[in-house]
Length: 101
Image (cartoon, rainbow, N blue to C red; front, side, top):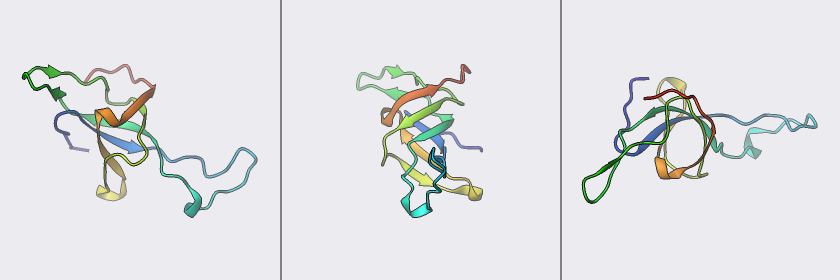
């Protein structure tokens, strides 16, 4: 993917939830919840404060994160779904990639 988000924005690839419950019941598409977990595909350069100082991003490419349920804008190039959200809509890092941008 050749996409560079601006400012404090992050490009995520949502991770689908399990299609079965632990007891083996298959969940139909209509009953599935919107995913709230994703993999960071690209990060911006960071937020600029009112005084002109730049705050670097805390996220790295490859991080697995939890994000707000209805955050961001979805787009789907080449049948792969992505989401662009602001860094403030990321709630937590589940697993870190330990890679630097």
